Length: 249
Image 1 (tube, rainbow, N blue to C red):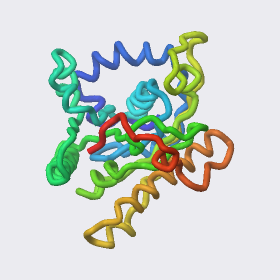
Image 2 (image 1 turned 120 degrees about the vertical axis):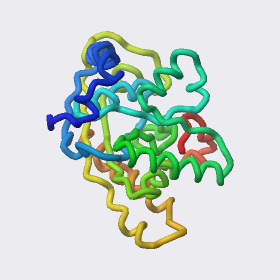
Image 3 (image 1 turned 135 degrees about the horizontal axis):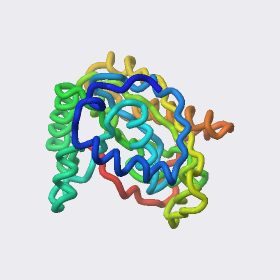
């Protein structure tokens, strides 16, 4: 593993949380992490993983911690108002996101991006916005939140794929505790090349940039699965499904 960043080695609330959570998560998942050096040691970044199980944020968080950075997610703004939980979310620097008008959403994206750069923090954003609906658990069509956040202040987008969490908790299924330490492989990729979209100037082709991010995630997952990814992303709207679930900026 590469050396830890200053934000991980500096005393913080993450230390006691990791001391409790990391061993418990490690009982469920035996992580095999590849490409950890692709995650920036310092400074802001947007990490974009695939999402196919309600339990995979645990694996993603542990992988980021082991890779040397403090894991911070986008979280619904309403969660910050829950007693105790809200205090923990604020103390760990999680990023609130709310349902809002287009203007308010754009303002919030810009403020969040500026904060990440100023504090040198990363954030984990699921670009699909919710669990994939793709029947074989491949990444589906992405939403634009991750690239909007990154392009607002020239923050690198790091694609990430993981595979194996479904053995512990299938999509919309029940938790399977036995056997312990199921194998989960994690692969970090190179920063997504979005220069073509940045060079366009406003208005940026956010959909095109998002497709590029999703393609890079799918390519990483194909390496882990040892099979080619579908040529086209699954679109829930084409199959009469609603896209509900996790909010995005």
